Every structure is written in C-alpha cells, then in structure tokens.
Image (cartoon, rainbow, N blue to C red):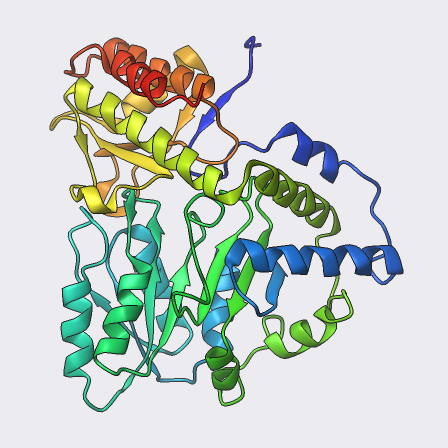
Length: 389
C-alpha cells in the first residue's frame, strides 16, 4: 500500500482526468439507437475542430497502429513506394508496418537526435523524377526521442519540388498537445490515438482524410475490410458505425473535447510549451543532456534525457518507481538504457509537474548518477516567472 496517487509521467498513455473517467463510467447504450447516433454526430463535428479540418474524421476502435495501417491500405497499392524520415523508434516502426503490407518502404537515415531533416527529404523527392514515391510519412512528435518535426515545412518542400505524393502524418502523441492543422498544412491523412493529448485510455484511433486521399482511396488495391474508409464514412453521416464501436470511450472522448475547448486549444498548446521548457531547464541544471539537440525541435509533449555513459537509465527508473511511486518512460530501440523520458502532457498542472521533477532529482541522488542539484529550483523559478497570475 502506497499513500497518495501514482505519478504516471510516461509520454502516454497519459493521466486520465477524473471528469473523463466519470464520463466513461456510464451504462452502455444501444449503438444503433437515436441517442448514440446524435452523440456521434456531435463528436464528429467537434473532432473537426481538434484536427482543424473541414472533412469528416474516421474513428476506429483500435490503437494508433491500426490508424497507421488504415491510412496505408486505404490509399496505396501493393509495391507502392513510401518514404519516412528516421526521427526515432516510431518512424522505424512505420517502415516495418509498410513492408508488412507489401509496400516498398524507404527509411531516410537519421541519428535520433532531432526532427525530420527537410533538406534530406527535399533531396530525395527531387531525385524521384518519375514520381515513384506515393507517400511521405512523417512522425510529428517522435515519442522515443522528444523531437517535434515541422510538418508544414515538409508540405512546403513537397510543393516546392512539385511532387504529387500523399503526406501522411503520425500525430499520435501530438494531437491535443501541439498545434496541428490538417487542412492548412496540406496533410492528406493524419493518424492519431486517444491515449495522449486527448487524455483518454487507449482504444480509439483516428484518420483525418483530405480530398486528395479520398481520390487515392478509389484506386487503392491493398485488400481491406475492417479498415475500409467507405463504409465508415458512409455510416458516419448517420452517426453510426459499420461494426460495434467503443461506446464508453466515445463518452470519454466527448468529455475530453469539452475540457480542451473550455481551456481553449491555444491555451492548451501554450501550457505544453511552458511545461516542456520548465522540464528542459531542470535537465540542463542537473548537467544532463537532452536527447533532442535541435532547439527548434524540442517537444512540448515529453523530454528524453540521456544518462551519463556507464549508467543505466532503467536502473534509475526502477529506483524512482520503488521509492517515489512514479513511472518514467523507458528508452526505446537504439536508445534503450541510454535515456529516460519525462512525459509532460495531457492532464497536468504546475504542481504535478513540479512533483514529478522532484521525484527525478531525488532519484538521481539515490541512484548515484552524476548530476548537479538545483534542477527543480530552476523549473520552479521559470514556472513562477511565466505564471498568468
């Protein structure tokens, strides 16, 4: 028995607010009945505001990986060439999924220390004079490394070289925490999940779809059934689904969007930026290194922190969990054991962030990791200086 709440400071699933938990704790209703269908229409209308699109957003009972697959099978054909830039683990996983679907997937190499390299993407697209590349896949916020890529910049590059490829954006860990503009930025399919900035449990995923992607859908030859956009979009007009939806998670989605709108999306994004900066100031004061080296790509969602050479980040995480009942994100893929990740997204306040940073600083001492004290104080000073009061 541990007194107090567990501190969940991983970069998702994020903390689920009490309001959302209460909303999901309701009797399940008939998903073919009028009450449910009206709720779905209302949710669909407000999802457009979250994604900043005029088109409908498809909702799947699935994880973000399902939404990845849906984007590809609905727009591409076997053997089509797609490219993605290696910002970290999730860009690499996207390549693996594409290959499993029979696509020709090319991962433009990166060092896992920053956002997608626009120059490298431009050079690759210029070299594709026959326009064999059918889709460019970008991870907006790379959860493994804490790097935020310039999605609008990628679209500008594609347009500047006159390349007709579709633009796919993995916004699983960005949506609801970072500004994303599906229509304005020329995104063709935005992929998202429920368990990060939307503050829900895992289990819902989304495709926001451009008119260009809908046109590609008519020609796509990869077999699809569960993920098929056509029946989803057709029945969505009536507020229904072609199969049983995740009813209670939709209750929670309705309440989570209410919370985001009450705070104001711009205020939500500013809060995440502020908490990210406070966390980085703590890391710098501790004398530790941010995994992302490019200030233009610092993530407002999480900070991935490198431990000194010869030390194991997972041992530090274990010490912090045992002593302070706080979970930090583990290092993934190439940085396993080298980094720990501090999530600062979703339902978070100054006090909860400050408590998390206190747990990290105390854990660094208990684990015997070389560091300087005073990181928490630096974060607190920044939060005080930038307070609205």
